[in-house]
Image 1 (cartoon, protein in one colour):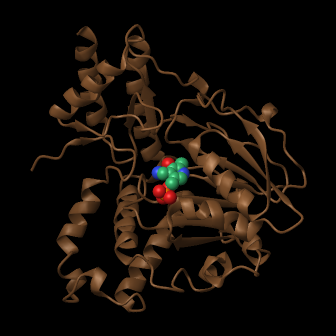
Image 2 (cartoon, protein in one colour):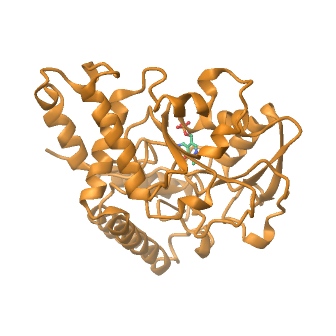
Image 3 (cartoon, helix red, strand yellow):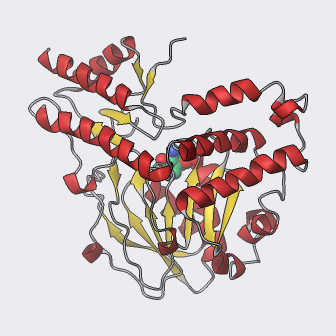
Length: 360
Ligand code: PMP
């Protein structure tokens, strides 16, 4: 079996152990004579998987009982709209920190729902090469919430430390870096993440939300969009994406078996240091545009001397089994996404190729 070195930005590489478990269990799940996807979402077999996935999220991230853990649908993009629908009442305003295309989209949706303003931006002609410092944030102390994007998948920037927003709830889109390390969940009012990078396949969106925000959330919106609906029904109000949640359970159980998020973080830091180390060493050839203190441990972006060379780099790498290295269509360049499931060996293989390629 030939598995490639997968640097896709999302959907992305998943741990082989999680896939193999799905393969083993696919036809006959735990002796029930059917696959998990053929089970009722109201039956015991599926319910156990569902609740195990929720517990694993709680255990891995240290989520307290003050929070609901929800599995929703519609991707992070739906949360761009659902967050303000629930948390932005008439007469209030929400603060958005712009650090890339995804936070711009989140702001656009919020503006359709109510009042939203820019509390800081590092756009700098759409280059977005860094995240702002605390002192640059012009926060409204009366804001309904402050929204940030913890990792900017397109531009390869990441908040190293989360901003202090005082009493105003901090809301984060963590689609592209949740579970890369442990962090203090209690600093947040709400966290959301599309699964298809670090958590599992696409189709499920993880939402971790403080219970008081759910209780105080707007009830004049359709029930399907209310967090309260999903919280009251353990994310089983309607049929959930059972296979996506099952696979997420496999990924989370695998992370736990690896020693939890401390071990995951150590591995991720080693991978990022290896790749950025090579970029710095080969800086006469490769250009890493991101400010050093904003470098993402998940998406490493860099440029070559010309666009033609970038195309050749991506094509030659693919021939050697390294796929998914083209930068986002809006930014160009090269991007290596090195999420949790990407191994140090894959990163070392890429670095060896980069050294060879730079020699011409
Ligand atoms: N936010 C971030 C940070 C992302 O990287 C993405 C896309 N991968 C999205 C939001 C949109 O996610 P989705 O496609 O799940 O709506």
